[in-house]
Length: 357
Image 1 (cartoon, rainbow, N blue to C red):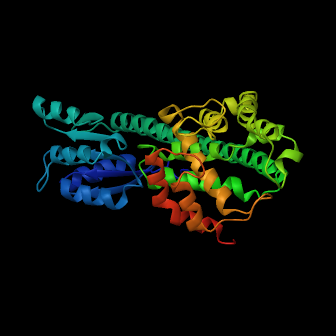
Image 2: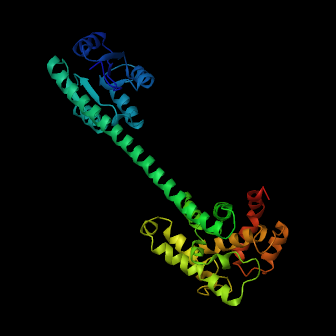
């Protein structure tokens, strides 16, 4: 047993009698490394210095400085009793001592004088059980780690596909793929840096931010002639343009992989409702006030801000301060006052997303 695959194989013998330590060492020395201590305090010190090597503790009860029961109390308090089997080797017949020892988690009680083949069999069996459990736990941890890495790769692939689809749509309208990433980043800033959306987990924030890149996915159903028209759209053309909200939600609902994705709920409501307005004058459903999903409200103001400060086929970019004034004055529709307040808190950070402008 001395040659093991990274499995600890050292016995710690804690007994104030040197003779007892020699006897027990002789029983196990052919298969285990041996460490010794003359009392509980020394035993704890030796254990703490060598805990990765020790596979079991053989413990006397009556010792000076610190007895075996006090050793067990500390061992249990530190949580080590769950990982390292402790065998009480004692001549004591006190039922109170034995009861407390078992209550503290001792694995077995072996009476002195010890019988070599008996103590060997009992100790070996328990150590093998603990080591098998440790190997199994290590294997499970490794398998879980590998599954986690696979899940992360799948998530990255899914996110990449989602961003690629959204970016391709933006290129159709002669816009850089940076647009969808900026919408994602502005959305994330509002979620992380303000309390507008309430308390959210990091995972929820990432799901909503990812969903934000799909806000205009419905534009895939709008002709290039309308998407890239350099002048104001006619009323009929604008009606067609507005259908990208409904078309986007329908498209997302028809992709099985998307419907099973955790971000689907947010993606659907953002695609359909990011052009709704607080006063009910938006589209497609003329939702009003808190009827508009929070995720869609956030993407709405992010989309408007990005449209204002970016050059488009039909306009030049506005200066940041001008864009902020236009949003505050209601020139781009009305927004939830609390959302507007939250956006103004992070707007200066948003400007950093346009460093190449």
